Structures are given as C-alpha cells and as structure tokens.
Image 1 (cartoon, one colour):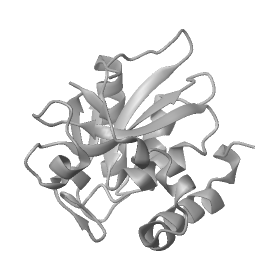
Image 2 (tube, one colour):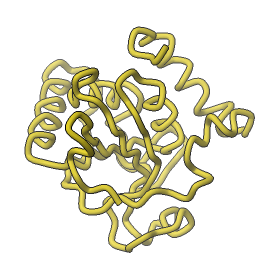
Image 3 (tube, helix red, strand yellow):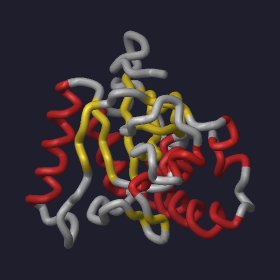
Image 4 (spheres, rainbow, N blue to C red):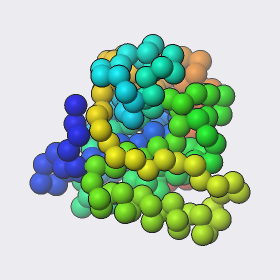
Length: 186
C-alpha cells in the first residue's frame, strides 16, 4: 500500500479513477516521466478488497490507477490534464457501457497541494466550458490504495486481443497516442 505523496526525492504519486482501470493504466504507462501505473482500488470501506467484491458494489471502492511520476518531467497538473482528456468526468458512476460506483470519476489526493491543484483544474475546465455537462469528479483524500490482483496489472499490454481490450481500451489508447504523440515515451 502506498499512501505517501513522494516515493523518493524525485518521484511523486497521483491516484485517479475514471472508469475501467485497464484503460487509464494503459495510457499512463506510455507517458514520459511516468515510472509506474498500478491498477488498484481506493475510496471504499473494506480492507484488501478483491475484484469480485468491488464489482459487487458492496465495498464502495473505485477502480483507480496509482501513477508514480517524475515532476521534473511531467507535473501533477499535466497528469490531471491527461486524466480529464481520457474519460468523461460528467457521467456519475459510469464510463460508456461500464456502469457502477466502481467506475466513478475521482481524484484521490495525497496532500493539500494536490487537492488545491485538482480543485483549480476542475474550476478552470468548468469556466472554460470544456464539457457540455457539469463535472462530477470527486476530489477526496486518499485513505488506502490496494493494488489489484496481478492479472489486472498491464492488462491491455498482456491481453490486446481480449474483446474488451480490442473494442474499448485499444481505441482510447490509439486516440490518445495520435493526439498526444509528444508526451509518449520513445
């Protein structure tokens, strides 16, 4: 469990939920300055939940990705800008056909600075009318992060031909890569 803001002198951690963690993780793992993107669960009531428990809607957890990054290469604000570009922050407990509280849009901040930046980012997007509907992204403190089961880690990379990956994850990843080639690892 990593609840700290920094993992070393140069690394910071962001925890984000925006639908299925397979999509979010696949995109962040491609970004310059990101050293790790780990799928997991946060924001719930049950210690060490399993995927099946989270999907039962009884634990309150969201599927999230914990992103470890070098702020000298990519800022937390940039991490959030990517986040808001890769999911729909205006749908409550839903991303496309994925429905349930585990798919909610949520930023789990690690400290007061992350909370401030998250709130400023949402305010700026709202004022710019970046989305037709109001942003429903929760901004809440991170209590605990529980890494998902090993088979969920790098799921898209390891299962590119799985139907969900082919029809949901691959188009999102492809779209991001096309529009943000300058951010990708070489």
